[in-house]
Image 1 (cartoon, rainbow, N blue to C red):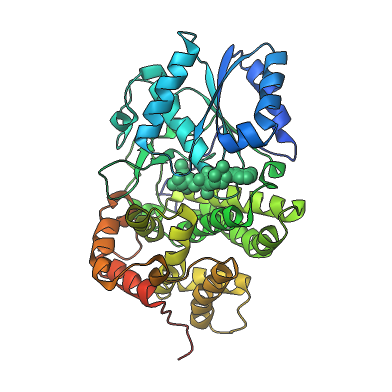
Image 2 (spheres, protein in one colour; image 1 turned 135 degrees about the vertical axis):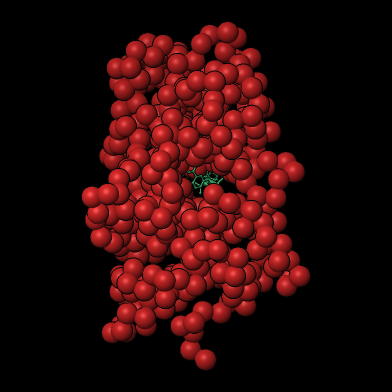
Length: 417
Ligand SMILES: NC(=O)c1ccc[n+]([C@@H]2O[C@H](COP(=O)([O-])OP(=O)(O)OC[C@H]3O[C@@H](n4cnc5c(N)ncnc54)[C@H](O)[C@@H]3O)[C@@H](O)[C@H]2O)c1
């Protein structure tokens, strides 16, 4: 990608980032330095009941003179209903005491729930009223994010994803003010992830890196005139992070999956996830996520699995439009071919091989999808307009139809006949 003086470069991240084993110890001193009197820890019952983390975090906050409430209602893939219920419970628990900040402890689901609460608690409206626009009554509460999986990057992003009753796909809260004030990435928090969570999150990170690396260029994205662009296409800075993320992922995900207590592999995946997020949180995503949201709406399968199944087929669909980038990914993944197109095709087949090695489905039939459902998947995916409009091939209708059919058949152009 060439640099050009006429085109602005946008880059979005949280205002502070820490990567440190044991970094959770920084939370109380940081909260104290902000002068916060009362904070809310948002987590789930795994962390509150099966680990000492919530109790010890609350006691260090207490020792720092900070009052703490705990909401442990987090669940995988939170819905707008869950967020509203949690909001009512927290307001009842607080009994009129103002909450100064929210601390999210958990995977992407808990961080997204915390982002939702950072708007519903101060403004006391259903979360659905904040979806689809950033014309909020004011700023969300400040957020401290402690991710416990290496994958979603929600600790960096401007979005929070919710299931919404009656909606075929997931919906998003979106706005730069939702980005956490600080993300504390502590690889030790991921050591307890079981292999299935490691695989789901790890392939989510790889999807973020690859999808944002091969997305639309910033100059074609049309966000340059926006007052405060969030997702705005790829640029040289996002590509730099995406490339390093892909390297970390191919080097460390198999070990993190097979040997959960390997702190070197866990740290590698923390970096893979962080770098992927530093890429996609500016560049944005496209077909993999659009179709994954549609498949999740249909099957309620996890975010990692629904991404994983489409990723190789989207890469394959772009081998001509993004040959150089995919060839580089192919080389990182271990391609022994010498021609760029062959390496680009290998990028898709080797990514699918990695997904298979992680015991994840590699075609739509494995989800029980019937051929008669393919048209609805294509339509639902295209309806996630903010993602479909970023696909490098426009208009995207034919490409989405081809990707869905090939994902159904498990067919890649690099497959040997
Ligand atoms: N806001 C964003 O920018 C963004 C981006 C991508 C994905 N997401 C969302 O994130 C969610 C997926 O998040 P996820 O993949 O991190 O999983 P998750 O947060 O849904 O967690 C999955 C399960 O793993 C458990 N878990 C998490 N960390 C653990 C640990 N260290 N040890 C043991 N168990 C642990 C959780 O308790 C939960 O039961 C989806 O809802 C997706 O839509 C959001």
